[in-house]
Image (cartoon, rainbow, N blue to C red; front, side, top):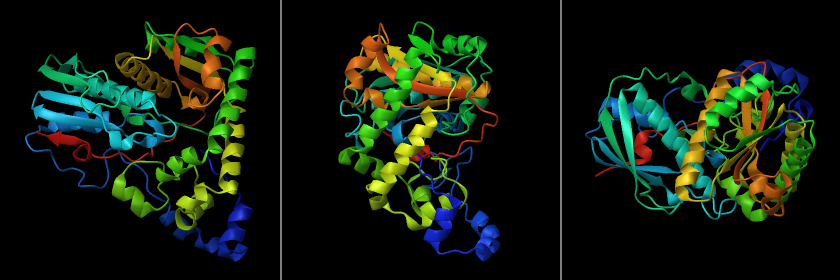
Length: 378
């Protein structure tokens, strides 16, 4: 969600005059919390008892995965140095917008994709065994790590991946770029719809109207408020959720949000209106839409498709293409029940992705919890 505050509105609300522009250096010094390559806060850097530096590095990379509201809903149990269990953290389940845990399982799939990529970088391969078919189980997969010849896997795209909401060019994605991204989804239904086509128009309208429908729901808006980290102190303490920087509210507006807005602000009519206005600007600026589908709704399939999405975003970053999930259509009625037939999909849609080329791809800013926060050593 994007909150937009004009410079004039900020100056009026903050009680500043033109002469206060002399404070700009001070405001820059208080520009907010941004993410470094390694986790911040919460004892970052401490090793988990009995865990090697390589294993710790894998977890750091895995935790850079995408998740709804940046909730980071994964849990790792270390049974031994080479045997782990990965599953869901139920305390991070977004019950209002994801009541059946579909998106939670997709997020764990993103985590697993990063973990496997990082394992290859450190010279390991992972054998996975299914344990529990429940999307909300803390024990979904058992992992066995085996040393292998180094795969020379690069972590650059993984570390640079970021979800962008602004700065999209309206130029259509080229067929060459679409073909490269489709290769990320081998054996998976990934369909591209140009923005200027009939299906693209349907997705544009549906993305905006479903966003508005969700923002009108008090339970969904309250859940969103729970995951916004307005103050730098809170952001550093928990290292998750949505900060002004990750929502791309920068400059004077970001300073105002961090210092003057609170949780109750998210429930106000003005905040919802501004969010809807921001969504309208977003859907009006893109190079097309991808729809990523699963074969079915099983936990195993959701984990797999979550991994596909993670690979797609990482590959798109290398092409300087932004990919922004706008999946409210899959969370709200009537869109979630009609989209499959309207787009003639053979599988079950799991991601609605707005995409577009950008002139500049900024560094990641979403905070990440260190491995100590989501790992239990038995």
